[in-house]
Length: 415
Ligand SMILES: Cc1cc2nc3c(=O)[nH]c(=O)nc-3n(C[C@H](O)[C@H](O)[C@H](O)COP(=O)(O)OP(=O)(O)OC[C@H]3O[C@@H](n4cnc5c(N)ncnc54)[C@H](O)[C@@H]3O)c2cc1C
Image 1: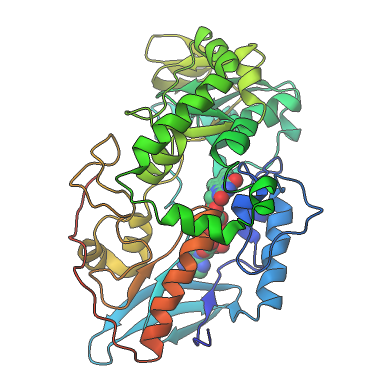
Image 2: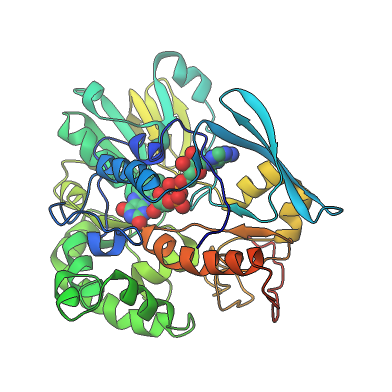
């Protein structure tokens, strides 16, 4: 669109965010959902590309799309200069401190904030002979053959890591504290994505961009009703594995109003796993399951609130990531973070998405209460779809086209 820009990336190569994730990671949703805009993944690729394929594609994409992309360029702070009506962005690039002065600043630091690291009594003593680390530092189960590993958490990373550890011969137990939405990956592909994001949809002339537009045209208030029907069909298709998981004591949920994984993601960004094998390992007992709260760590392992002890050499905290607001506060300071308010959430009134009802995702891809500040992110489908609308708004401002905003959203600070 001819908008002057610079993308700052603290890593040394585009795609490092994906490259650095655990080796076993492949995309969990089918390729028709995850294409990048303008240039689709090759037709020879699998339906679920590996994380390294995505990483290399991003690196190539930056080059061939002519994106002004600075690597080893870490943003350390940004402040608004009212007299110049623009931002002063402090960066460190290849060790050198620089300041940039853009009119518009887009935060695109990822869908989540910083890793959530629960603290447990006894952790220090445990770490004298054993180890505890967050799932974002997990690479592979290769070093854990014959070791006892407890994985804390029951969403995507927890499942993937349990399966990977098991495949490398570790003795693995998952600790589940709260219910998880489980959908078979093939079920997701056929039932949820099939009409819009699939080979069949393509044959009907619906490519990813058209599918995005169709999805984005559905008002958020209508989504739960539509998805309740889809969710019921998915549960029916997955009935066997779901009932066997329940028999093992696994806590299942499908959203407070049974609207399933997609609405849960829109509301809370978390709480699900698209099953690509780990559920069978749990249902058959090959990966152990303990439901409950952890009381502390001891030399023996993980001590649960009910007094049970899970022997452990290693504890992996697949406990997710904090909110994007943490990142805002870290780089822009608490004053700007307060003025901006909560990022993500609709105000649907369910747990982790308290009201009041907003009707659109808070602060995403639209003008915010902070002049010149924009927030971008989401999964690959949202990134593809909404980057266009965000870019159009930036282009209009760059061209000096009048951009009146009718009703900025109210600011909320809800946990
Ligand atoms: C384990 C895991 C599995 C996932 N699987 C899927 C999936 O199957 N499908 C899907 O659609 N999504 C998946 N996601 C979500 C995924 O993160 C997004 O889809 C995608 O990576 C979002 O791209 P992004 O550019 O918005 O954020 P990211 O890929 O997170 O990129 C943000 C970038 O900002 C950089 N950055 C952060 N702070 C600074 C700073 N201060 N200065 C400079 N640079 C900075 C980071 O280095 C990073 O490269 C997964 C996430 C995780 C954690």
